[in-house]
Image (tube, rainbow, N blue to C red):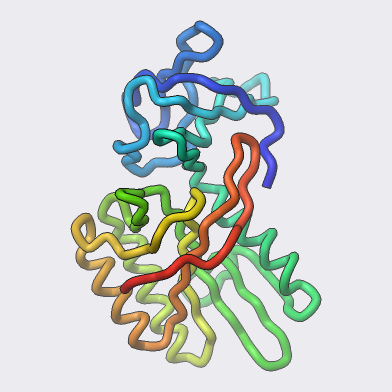
Length: 224
């Protein structure tokens, strides 16, 4: 995926989950943060940030904060980006063999992707990952009842005959491996282990990251 119009800035503060104060071209600006997670280890004072400039003149905020440098590593924090890059990847690699539908409703659930051919029916849930420590990445960065609910849904749908998968999209390049964050959310971690034991496919992929683009790169070792 490509961002149309980007600029650089410096992070100042984040008064709430949705907005941040940033220094852009010598001016203090209010920008929209495209990630409601904590991101505390990323959005630190004076951190170099990447913003997309909106082409909508009616918007209250002109900028979207989409990425941040953690040292020399660029980390995309756009929470909408993982689904977009997965959709691009699925279309590129599977569209000739599978019907692919994003945001698929089944029962009381909505799953990120549904794929079907004459032999298989596949349901895929996607989670973006931005938390890194010593080149080890993990999810979630805060307790997520919603994330646990999604895993339970995949377990249930697996029992109904679907192939079910949970894919963690690591929004940075070249981590050593991925682990569930049992310290921040032990319930999520235990539910993930149960899903793996029940036959839900668990995978992780990192991304090619530039200031104006994001693309899935390769599989990352997963330790459960």
